Length: 453
Image (cartoon, rainbow, N blue to C red; front, side):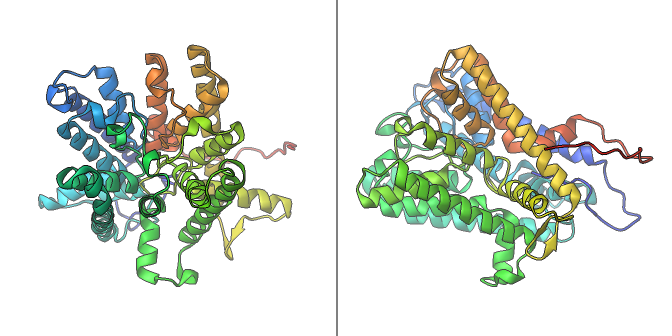
């Protein structure tokens, strides 16, 4: 989600909406989608028992699906009918792509002229650097998404058709391809064991690799796809955003994987040890699938996964969380202070001060929300704080991983988790920009230094 609402969107005489309007439309769009999804899931046709599912459960499911999180209170495979699963998949697809992206697509298909205001909203929605070429970029995003999801479904279908039959196997392949690409973490493996996720495929190299690739591709962001499509393997020609995204993503996959390899899965056969280590490192940053029993994980492993969940994916992607670029900017800012440099630099480029300030604000916001809500749920449910912090980190980072307590929590805790999922997907700064008026600075106040550190 956007962290800079002051981008140039046209010539000097071009009219543009007040920045907060875009953020309000984005927030309200997600809310409307969630409410519609919750009401449809209440219909008897949405459940396998053909009974009305309580609104509290359908609302939680709709929030989790729209915010591509994966936390559930009803097992997706055993409670929801094919119709209900299709509704959930549609919410995942729209939530992952963004309501503004889908809205712009519908407007174009209906022949409506796309004005500057709508283009500006799209720019904010996908964190594009400028409004020029936004319609072409939207078309590229839609075509690439369809191609990747269909390819993923095609690759998964041989395994799922073998295990579940032809028709169901094709549905399972499509569902898990979309869910993985959108970093949602919803699965249909509850037919084997409720809430089991992909544990039955923990040692299956083929399924693991495909799911991991879909998660990574969906999480690196639309603008990075465009850079890769345009410049291929010429990394030096990528924009700074793409360079930071790819470098940070690689670090956040392989370093945690090494930790899991030597600490969590040391006693397992080599194939499963490698697969589990890589998969948990990839899925922790907002995907929500798991191939191993997380309840057996040590506290150190759970703590590392919580940090990864809070970091999340990349800006302008299907993933949530603080974003990899935010963490990278904070690291670079700290490094510049240690080296007593005046400016924050990366790949022979200087970063704007506003970007550094926004990254610090995002870190502060996520830390406060993560800790306060974790403590609140721990007090409400009388559960260990570490377990509750894992749950709130999963919700805020839209990861969807759990230590097995989601379905047993009370309504107040579920409301907290829903608010966290919404904030994590829409973006904390987006919600603040939508709620608060933005004032202009008319004069600079006197400068006075404050000692820190």
